[in-house]
Each structure stands twice: as C-alpha cells, then as structure tokens.
Image (cartoon, rainbow, N blue to C red; front, side, top):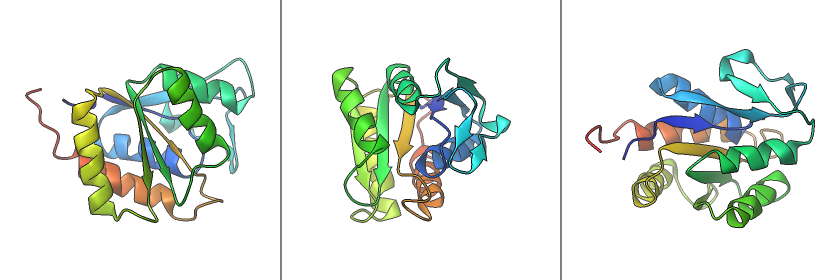
Length: 159
C-alpha cells in the first residue's frame, strides 16, 4: 500500500509537518483550510495547495479533511485537546481509521514503525495528518515531518 496524497488543514505544528513531509517526498498534498487561510502565524502559505472552505470555522475544514481521507494520524505531546480532540471525534463519527501517536511516549523510530504498520493494515492511500499546534507543542512540526519521512520513505511501490 502506498500513500498517494497527504491532506491537512495547514495550521502550524503537526499539520504543516505533514504537508512538508509530502513536499519532501514528492507526494501529492493539499486539503481544506478555513476561509481567509488564517493560521496562528498569519496566512497559510500557498505552497501547501489548500482549498479554502466557505467558512472561517476550523471545525468545518477539520471535518472535510477527515471525510476526504482514508484515515487520520493524530500527533500530539500528551492527550489530544482542543482541535486534536475534535479531529479524533470526527474520525469516529465518520467511521474513519484513526491512529493517535503521542510523541511524549513514542520516539521517532517507534512512531514511524507504528504508522507504517497502521497504514498497511487500513489501506490508507490518502492520509490526513493532524495534531497539536506549534504554540502548544514546540518542535512538533519537525517531529511529525521526521516520523512521516521515516515511515513513508520505505513504502512498497508494488501494492
């Protein structure tokens, strides 16, 4: 099984770590972001190829990214709160596979190995990457990028 596309909401932190990994790997990427392209650090850069919803409500883009994916990986430091908790709830509501990786518990290598197995088990071709914002979890964007690069760089191309 090969991940063909990574989607995300483009917020700072886990979202951008996922999109940056897609760019690094040459994987298609995009997703939904709120009208106005606002994130905690200002406008979401165009390089992420996000489509604006008609609403500025972050919950709308979160739900669309969950729906448009085959599964969601949720990266946090600790238990999911706020938007991360909403993402987990929406994955359940829409009966979509969800993997929560608490990076306080799992080292990069362990998280990457778990993710690779989960992707294969759930036949995920379109992966939604979500999780903590950079202001809540400094360094999470780089950690997410590293986990994804490690997990996806060895994808089998014959699936």
